[in-house]
Image 1 (tube, helix red, strand yellow):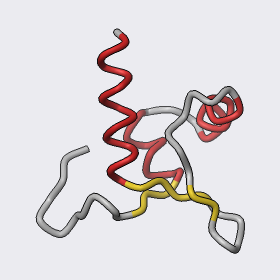
Image 2 (cartoon, rainbow, N blue to C red; image 1 turned 90 degrees about the vertical axis):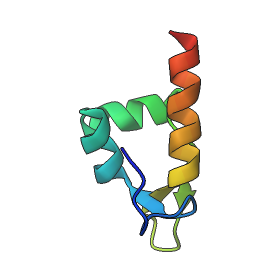
Image 3 (cartoon, rainbow, N blue to C red; image 1 turned 135 degrees about the horizontal axis):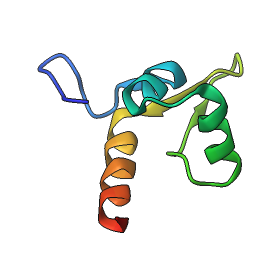
Image 4 (cartoon, one colour; image 1 turned 60 degrees about the vertical axis):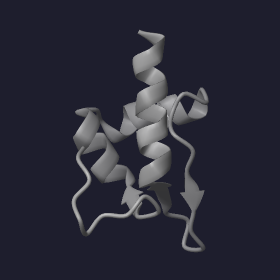
Length: 67
C-alpha cells in the first residue's frame, strides 16, 4: 500500500481495505485480532472498525522485522 499526496498518516482504513491489501479474508483478520496479532483498531460509535494508516504501516514494518 503506497501513500499518495491525498493520503495522510491519520487516514482511517476499513477492514475490507486492509484485507484486500494483505490478500486475506475478513475471517482471518478477525482471528488475528482475537489473538492480538492484527493492527490496533478504532471502534466507531456504530460498531464498525477502522485502522489508522500510520498504525497499519507500523504493524507491517514490525512484521518485516520478525521474518
